Length: 382
Ligand code: GLY
Image (cartoon, rainbow, N blue to C red):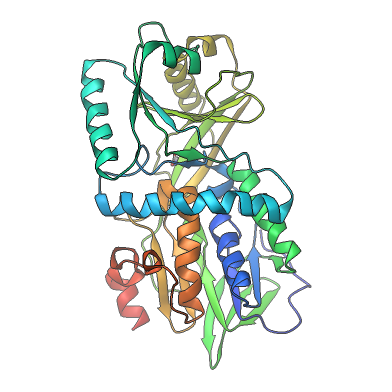
C-alpha cells in the first residue's frame, strides 16, 4: 500500500536504495561505510522474502550443484563471519547467529550414497565435512527417529535469525543517520545528472539508484524487463525444542532450522502461484508430517506459526546484480539464497554504484549474475 512520505526532502542523496529487505539494507550500509550519502525507501511488502526466510547460510546443503555458484556462496558465508558481529556491535542487539553447521541424517542406503557425494563435493571445495557416529548424533539431536544411526555434518554452514538480522541492519543505518522512507516506488526515470524514484505521494531524486525489490522488482516502471517471478514458500514453526544442536537439519524433503528460544522452523514449499500468499492447511500438514517422521516427538505438538513468503526466482540459478544504465542498478533474483548471498551482493554492488574498484577480486560481479545476460535487459539498457 502506498503512503505519502513527508520526509523526502533535504539534500539529494548520492544513492537511493529501493527495497529495505536484508539485501537492500546491507547495500545501504556498505554505501554509507564507503562515505556515500544514502537513503532507503521501502513499503514493508507483505510476503517479502527476507523476513519470511529460514536464515540458512548453507553454501553446500542449500546450493545448486554448480561449482561457481558454490564458490560464490562460500565467499558470502565468509563475509557473514565478520558481518554478524559487526551488525550486533553497530545495532547493540543479538541476531542469533549460529555456526553449528548443517546436519544431514542418513535415512536409507540410497541416502548414504547421496551424502557421500555431498561430502566429496564439500571436501573438494575445501569445506569441512564429517560423519557423525550414532552416539554423537543422538547427543546432538535426541529426538531423531530410532534407526537413524549416522549423519553428515557440514560444520562450515551457519544460520541466522533473518528477522533479527534485518532489524539490526536497520538499527545500524539509523545510527548512521540513514533515512528510511516508507513508500511504494512505482516508477523510476533517469534525468540529466540524476535519477528519480516516484510513487503515490513519494518522489526522490538521487545520484544513483539500486533497486532491490525482490519478487516485486518487475512492477517498477522504467526498469528494463527483468525475468523475475515470485516463488512461494510456506513454512511452519514449532516451539519447545531443546536439543543441543542449534543449526539446521536437512533431508531431501525439507529442512528444520533452530532458533534461539527453543523454536524450530520447518520449510518449505516451492509453489508457482503468482503473488498469492494464502496458507494451505494441506501444505502445513505435509510439512508437519514430514518433520514428525524424522523427529517423532513433533507428532504431539501443534505448529505455533504458519507463514508464506515469495522468493524472487530467475530463469537460471543466478541472481541479477549489476548496472542497468548509468545511474540505475539492480540486486534481486536471489531465489533460495538471499540471506546467504546478501553480504557478498552488498559488497559487490557498492563499489560499482560508486565507480570504485572493488578491494577484493571476489567482488567483481561475474557475468552469470549481470542483468545483461537476459536479452530484454540488454536491449533496453543499451
Ligand atoms: N532458503 C530456503 C528456502 O528457499 O526455502
